[in-house]
Each structure stands twice: as C-alpha cells, then as structure tokens.
Length: 322
Image (cartoon, rainbow, N blue to C red; front, top):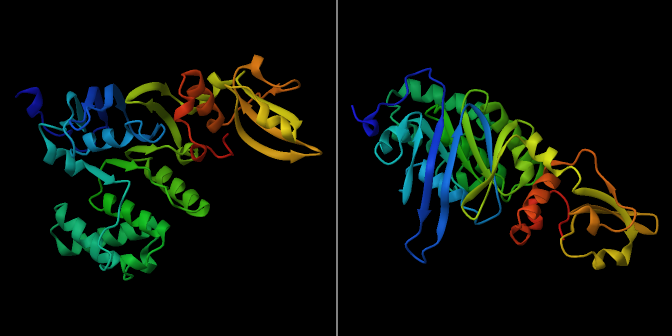
C-alpha cells in the first residue's frame, strides 16, 4: 500500500493533524498566502493566532479539503487532504468564518440535513445524536426556531452543532467570535474548551482573548509563515522586560516615540495610567516593567519585536491599541 493510500487512523487512535511544508500561492495576483508551514497537533485546543490576512483561513481551507496546496502535504487522522478528501471529511467538523445555514429552515432541520449528509442514515440514531448536540451547545429550547430568528451567538452555536453532529475527532473553527457580544464570547470559549478534552480543536483567530484558559498550545502566523510555536506561557515569558506601566500627563501620550504601543489606558489623578509595550529605553521617565504581562500584551510585544507592528489592529487586543 502506498503512503498516499494509507487508511484512516483506527478507532480510538490519538487524533492528530500533521502539516508538512505546506505553501499556497493564489493564481490571481500571485499572493503567497502560506509559506512552508509545518505543524503537528495532538488532542486539545490549539490556537492559531495572527492578524487579518495572515494566512489562517487559507490553512483552514487546505485542512478541510476545500483548497489544494501549491506544495507540501497535510494529514488529518492519517488521511491525506489531497489524496483522501472523503476520508478527511468523515473525521473533520468545520465551522467556517461565515456560517449562515438555511435562513428559513428550523434549527433541527439544519442539523438533520447535515447529519444525513454525514452518513447518519438510521433515523432513530440520527434523532438521538441531534438531541445530544442541541443540549451540548445550549440550543435545545430553540430547536424549532427558524435560523433567521437566531441571535448572532445562537447562530455561531448552531455552526458548532452542525460541525459536531457526526461526532468527529477533529474540529476546525475559523474566527469563531467575530460579531459576538462579550457574554457570547465567554460562553463560546467555555464550550470550545470543554470540547477540546476529547478532540483536536484548531481555532483560528485574530482576537487574542478567544484562546481562553483552555489553550495550552499555540502558534503565531503572519504573512503565511509561522513565527512562534509554543505555549501561551512561553509567549508571556518572552514578553517580560517589554511591557511597562507608566503614569503620564494627558498630553504626553500623543508624544510617545515610534516603537511604543499603548495596550490600555485609564485616568489616574490629573494624568493617565498607560500599559505600554516596547523597548525599555524608549519608555517615558518613571515607567516600570510589568512582572506578569497578559497574553494580549505578550502577543503585541512579540509582533513588535518581529517587525510586524503595522499588521496589528486595536481590535486584536483587549485594550485600546494606539
């Protein structure tokens, strides 16, 4: 049996995603969206963090067999995404960035159709599985509601439900919380964290707080290249000595030098307290280093050090970027 024809991983085998030297160049415009990406993922929640346009969605499309890479290869649960697309689709649940489903259909009807397409032919077993998934994502009480009447948060939960209805060992989620209010973002993070106990979950986002406490492994990607691979704790460790607190006069903020970014600000007395990221020598007088930076601050510090400050948007952070 050739390597390309290898079967799916056996039931009960540790779920994995293997990406080896994957590159992709779009024919129109010749844009290199991915540049020699290599990652191996095991069970749990894996965060793929990077600014808009970094190549995250292109990688998601490769792993879900929607896009053939220009070079390199990827396997999901042992199945090659190019040579064995049907096998990959059987073991992957996918929540794309834009999920609208059928607006006039009812929630349960959407899940029933997706379950049928996934090969769940037994009506009784399909109904039981739909009930389980509706309960899991918190939509049991709106099962008969039409999709067009769902809130944004409910629609994202329906997207998760359709990705889970065939009980896949791998879940791929692209920019899951865009447009959600803070309460729905928290709910979504908890749901994904719980699901990651039994699956590989690859979560792509440009919003640092989406990763949540359940994320123990991550990568930072920009301009198609992986710039960092490790734990959130490691990224935070690398930021020590680059994140500062400073109290300055209100008009002094506008005079901060190039290479210093404002993460957050709040009034203090007649001045303003700033959380700053950058090199120590560029900081205003009296700035003190922060012993335990947050993940948002660590990400910004890393991107600045890598020369990627122009790619960072204020919406990527929890505070008020400058």
